[in-house]
Amino acid sequence: MRMGGLRRELGRHLILELYGCSPMLLDDEAFIKNVLAEAVKKANGNICGVFFHKFNPQGVTGVVLISESHVSIHTWPEYGYAAVDVFTCGERMDPWKACEHIVENFKPSNVNVLEIKRGLLTQSNRS
Amino acid sequence: MRMGGLRRELGRHLILELYGCSPMLLDDEAFIKNVLAEAVKKANGNICGVFFHKFNPQGVTGVVLISESHVSIHTWPEYGYAAVDVFTCGERMDPWKACEHIVENFKPSNVNVLEIKRGLLTQSNRS
Image (cartoon, rainbow over all chains, first blue to last red):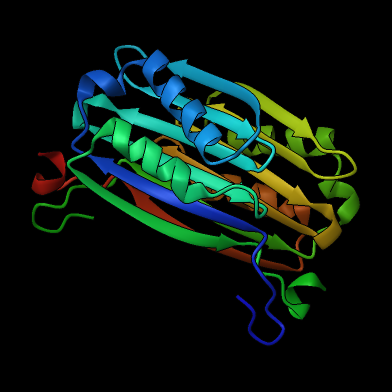
């Protein structure tokens, strides 16, 4: 995108709302870690670190830090819901490939994805 | 918010765009870690883990995992820009208090904040 003084965005951020997932999968830390790591690989990202936390009695929260930003997840098994963010920068990584892998594996009955352009630099923003 | 079958959201997600920050601060990993950890404390959050990565030649990326979800940052010192996310759940933590602390410390010349409600559960979403 180039419009006058508005240059290309620095990052692309996908906000995924996954509803109607299996509560069992949403509480399975190993499964979730694996899905997110695979999603990063399929999207051509480089993993810097993988950090997860399992809640008692249920729920998993975690983030995969990547050279190109991050992928995060927070799950509510009791509602069949997961909030996922896929934030990437650069040309090499395609956040939508990660998104596809995540949706294919969590199999939500209802999914919403919003893409936000991050870091739109204009002359006034850079001052 | 209650509208018919639409119950209160599970999470609140603030998307911060910080422009015109000091490049020196945006490349200072210790400073950034400290600002984010303090922001979580001021907002009444509980830290589960703090994970950062410093890029060569410049830029810092990091996440503070909290019981209430996460706070993340990615900086581009060369553009004076930082992308910050403050994602919280529950009544106890106020994401706007974290946001205020972050803005006060990074002193951007231009800031945009977008609040997204995450996990709006309806009858159809839960099926």
